Amino acid sequence: MALILENDADILDEYRTGQRDRAVTAFVRKHQSFVYSVAYRHLNHNEDSQDAAQEVFLRASQKLGEFKGESTLQTWLYRITVNVCLNMRRKKRFLSFFAIGEGEGERDVAALQHSPATHAEQSEFDIYFQAVLVTIPTKQRETFCMRYYDELSYEEISELTGTSEGALKANYHWAIKKIAAAIRTSDYYEEWFENERP
Image 1 (cartoon, rainbow, N blue to C red):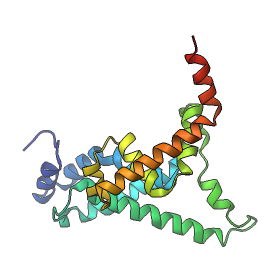
Image 2 (cartoon, helix red, strand yellow):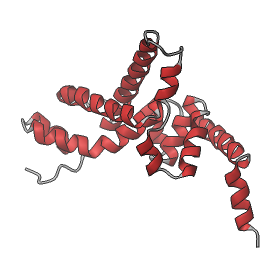
Image 3 (cartoon, rainbow, N blue to C red):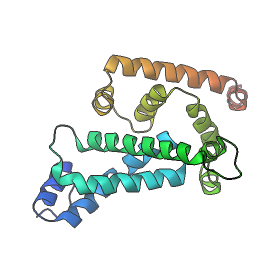
């Protein structure tokens, strides 16, 4: 028995031989950062992303024995995470119709705001940058984040999303152009430009 379950094959073997608790613990530790980052990009809210990640691992852990290996575990988790996030967003929109004393759409807007704890953890530029990302079309934003934050190759992103590498490169190109244009009109750009002058 391996002392540490370092890869997905070991985790799956451990699960299938009856050591399910140990396998699930290793499974969550290995992939929790990835699942949370995907959830956060879709929900843009710390607590909602944590709830989504918890739901993803609950579902995945129950189905781990049925995983057939037709994709990587990361690809499988990515699809589950996106589905969970879409369901959460649909539920929020539905509940907003029944909100008492709130205008239509207010609940959705509130859900996109950062909590005080998140503000404390991030620099002003990080908050600004997240706000810029929200304005970029979903596919472009997702491609940029998977390249920039997760450091995945186009081949890996293609496997995860089912999008061609050519389309992904175009998405990344347009995302960079839009981010650069936004930063050029910000106070940060002027500040950096001033600091670079001799």
